[in-house]
Image (cartoon, rainbow, N blue to C red; front, side, top):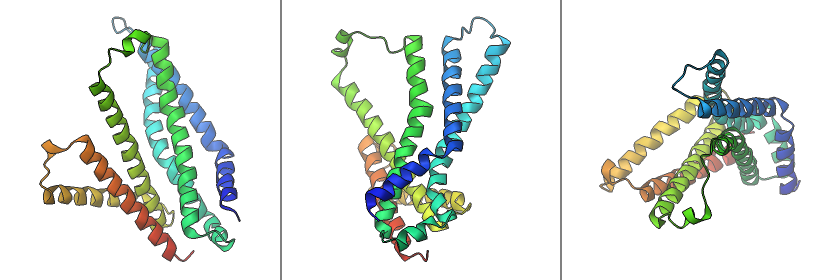
Length: 240
């Protein structure tokens, strides 16, 4: 079986997961409506009963979104262990390393889509409706290069940190073979990684006041590469 066909199969399977798609649609709508109500709320007056209900649903939706953004990639990663699909894939001629990267790629793709739909799209809609991103072309020339670099640094740190956490989750799924104990393995690896990071800072003489964006990026990159290699090594030796 060709690698591209395996990737297409993963995409098709995730696109036909109607339960997750329905949950994403509901959360996106509630996040958008709740954000609009919060943005247009005038705190000089008491909100109406309908506004209070929407704000309450919005708070619950935000909590549900955070939980969903963690469990959605976990569910996608563990499905093949649960349904014994992985062993069939390996038997069809796909190597374990190839399948690992296909699974990581497809899960990352849909994780990014979920973040976009549940967080970025509602945020942009709220900003547009409240006039939060109204600016003229001339305003762009007044933005300092330092501010642009700082914003890009924060964005890079967030993306690399997200990829590091994603690698940690994938490795936890492989170690626990997709069982419910994966959550505990994830938190255990997270604690171990933080302790190793603290030890590395102590060895290089870096205290909390000297932690910069570059240092944080390097830490996340090392964690991501180390956990990815660990996941591949464990997967190659597992009895599927």
